[in-house]
Length: 316
Length: 198
Image (cartoon, rainbow over all chains, first blue to last red; front, side, top):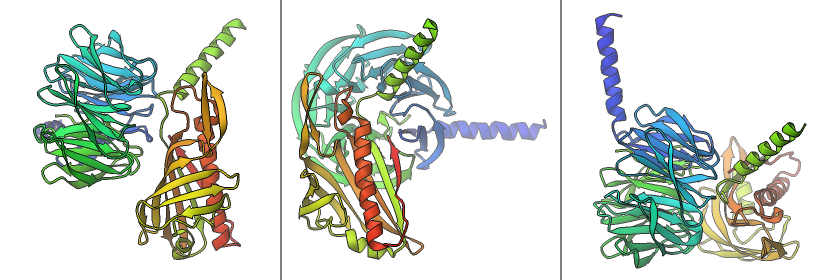
């Protein structure tokens, strides 16, 4: 091989690596058994990866360059390389894996088992099972506190949130919230936890210090998930049956806007820039991008059938 | 002989587990028919939310109106009722969207120690959109319904499981579109295509 070709190849590889080093949104298309990878700089799908088993949940592990995709009908979850988007392996978990989350150090991945009412903890190096923690009925959404001390789990059928001590891997507290909490989020100071309650059409705001209810906020019909943006000053909530996203000011807890997106909006996540919010529209098979500064949608990106993206799905 | 039967039972057990995974899952059923008539003519027949006379399974309708939030109550041949709320109506798109807000029940069954009502349409959280599109001079009607099975816990009884839901919704959409086609193009041989995704 001649010298110039090697240089060209090296250059192109470097470019590709740089491109793949940008934030990407990983959208699970549950009805298609694929994952759409969106380059958030170009606002385009750059790859569509086959993942069997009705992919639903997403978690990002920057420390290991992994993306974890839960497959509720695939008996576990898939591990994807965040640079090449190739599926590296699958990990077996019993029951039905839906919610999936990673600790802040990227060392442990947590998988919520809908049927076994437990959280299975795996090591992200070897994918050996470390522990199984019994929680409430039908654990769904999960999130880890910024200081890596707590794992919060929404027990959908129990209408409660479990707070798990990550050092002891045991439950410290379980608190009742609204009806059927699903997607949850904690702020960047670890102080407030927000839960989307599907059956009561509201959001519960908890003070994490004592897991006490601060407020209950009315939103639209059948809220699915929540995300914070603009330095935690705004909370966005997907209202599945209204085809809208509620934008709430977290200081006053007042709804500032109800933004029209696609049909059956579900997964929602904020870009690392804190400004752009991505919403997966299950029925419309696309993603709506909202500018949190203007509270308007700015892009629509076509993905696959049954776009769900349940979890924190944008890589840094 | 013993080993083989054990293997088969194990395989069946695994299969059941996979099929029942994850709690009730939302289904999306798309019913399509192409009618040999102008799209505007077909839209004319179905465009009034309060008029379901084109659907043979619906005996009468109370309420209606084409404004967002309008409510209609359908009375079926068997006396059962379904109440639906209009989510959007667009004349220019020749489409409207609605959702079921209430249903009467056809009876009760006992399951897992509880009395379970059987709704007249064995589904939960049902929403639908009906739309007409011009396809080269012909009318393509697409009726899409999203719904869950009626029983929200695991291990549903046969009357309230996914199969029962799919069967019932298929009947509603197929009967309706076939009748619509026959009404607008009586000599036509249009067939309904059903696609279910879950």
